[in-house]
Length: 270
Image 1: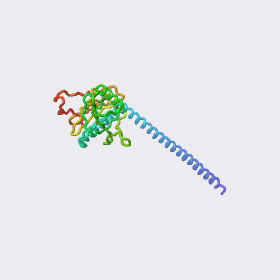
Image 2: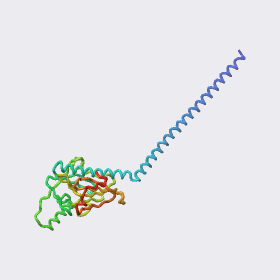
Image 3: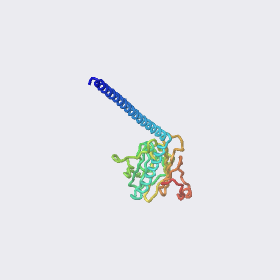
Image 4: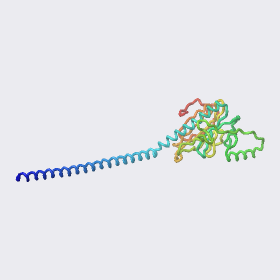
């Protein structure tokens, strides 16, 4: 019994040393595992930051290349062409004269309707084509015209906004339709205008029976100084067809039946 005691003590000490060594190894293993977990977390965070930076760079590249502006330009020209078709169809359906109003100062457009017959005065300097004045500039132009003529005046037809497909100026409705962000009406001219207009309002008239004015509308990005970024909408008088052309295209008033023919389809029409 005396000789066995040292062996028992040594065995206990050996088991204690093994337990302590195992505990230290487990502690080191947990430490390495936590470190690896932290490393994996940092790696995922770095990946997210890199993806965010790539997304920002792609956004800048797309915006800088003009793709977004080009898309808005196409949507706006489609909207204008749609307004022309609505006015052309509505004039026949309601047997009332319609007009598309383009505000070059506010960069908006809407539709209006008249209950009285409308006869266009060609080469009109007031811009209304013979209808009642709406803005102060139009009223001043009418007063000056009446002062020069000093003759009996005929009551002028007046127009009011219509609530067709959102093209309206009525409060509580959708209101005037603006162009896309970053775009502008460069200029516009109806056949009754004496020259293209860059300020004020341009009125394009539609009559019952399916006829409208020959007109030209130019739309371009505000920041662009190049003619290559401009799109021109040309409106045919007999069919109301809208042809979209690249670049600024001035309105040409035909002098004979051949130049006035609409039989030649040059494409890009709505």
